Length: 318
Image (cartoon, rainbow, N blue to C red; front, side, top):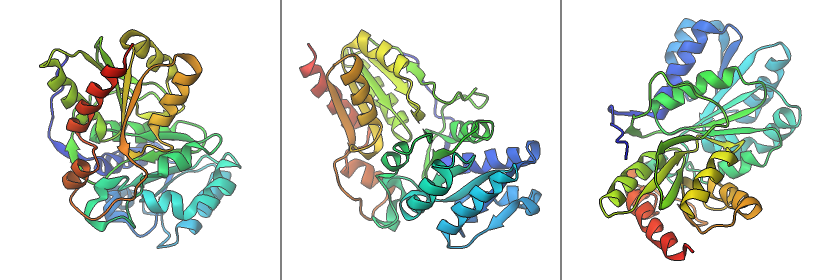
């Protein structure tokens, strides 16, 4: 199995900030809007270099979405920024009506997603946002796994015509993907090849999936790991190719099992190739206050939970 090296822990939100800095230098049509969270979104350098292309909206997220939709009419490419909870749940009507329904070229960039927002607790964490956004017609949904991939995705979505939801996080996590990667929207990334089980992971769970696969290899189980950075549109061809080979799948995500990546994979299997599936995700619950590591362990979102799910799905494999 190919071994991936942790190049040093970095937060994915800083990958977004680095991507915005580069976009500010290369694409004069890119503008940034923020709801009073400049430091949390790591966009200080973009603002310093492009003050005329930054709009501080304040704690008025619904207004921010309306302004962003309007800016597209003038040919600009607006990137909105706030916590994932406020980027989706608080402003769902504005996104649906002013952005998605109208097909506006707005990039909704959401930091502090999932449980790993940590100590701020359940009111600021969100585990429903992927489901909310993927149900909107025409909305592309991306959930990146590390600093390098988040930077690459930020650059890629600027060239994509249409509304995008880009989801990333607060904690520092292993940075292991290629810094010069070609980020292709809608294309899964095969990380390791295997023959016994497919592990499909997204976001912070991708590294956990790799750690689980390594532990399983030591126990004689060959796991194929796929990084699904684009949840919508889903790369069904890559998924089916792998699962037809291994015969079963475990999906892993920092999100409710209702409405997330796992459901999209299940729909694909039901339609094309029924196979056993286990879900590593939160179980129809809100989060709570705690450190990122404490919460990931308590809610079963770590490599140990993935490994357990693999053993469960192998028992069901025909």
